[in-house]
Amino acid sequence: MFKIAVCVSGGGTNLQAIIDGVRQGVIPNTEIVRVISNNQNAYALERARLAGIDAVCISPRSYESRELFNEALLAAVDEAAPDLIVLAGFLVVLPPAMIRKYEHRIINIHPSLIPAFCGTGYYGLKVHEAALARGVKVTGATVHFVDEGTDTGPIIMQKAVAVRQGDTPELLQRRVMEEAEWIILPASIALMAEGRISVEDGQAKITDGER
Ligand code: GRF
Image 1 (cartoon, protein in one colour):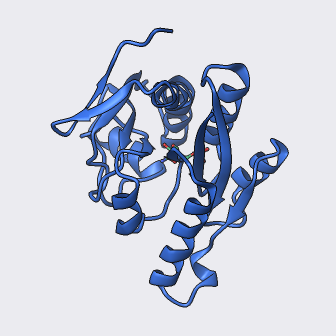
Image 2: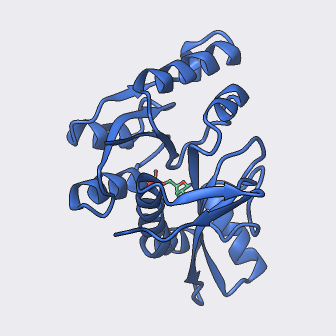
């Protein structure tokens, strides 16, 4: 079994897509061993519990310093012993020690076509507000490995989504989720579970599978 830990902060629709993908076999031979939230009110935690998955909250508010929070977060991950850590709307800057320890074993979903509308300050609705302000006609989502930069790691998968006249940030966010995020995140995890992704010279390569 390929073991994944999923880190969340909010509603958890991407987590739900992963849960459904595992159930339906879109993500083969995989178990979600733990869901970790930094926010105890995240509905994602409820989704995990409803699916019978171990769910824990590690909130920075419960720790006296960032260092102690970072240690607790890493300990919560280590305890679950995952093969892969999936950041599914996780609004926390990861501890550098965690990034080093799990090199090429942490992936993130970002709601734009990187390198557009990414980096510091581009999260949640802000990404879609920026895309609309620039007047792009196509946006999308990207799954990438996490390195020590912000949205700079090797790109695994991307999917484009049309921007429509009259879009609001909320409408665009929803379309990007439905048409891109909920598809490419499970698909990327499936490739990881099948051992079909490698990183060569800073770029993610997908190898042909037997399936
Ligand atoms: C998604 O748009 C994801 O790309 C972003 O945060 C949002 C999380 O949504 N980084 P959800 O919690 O998965 O519903």
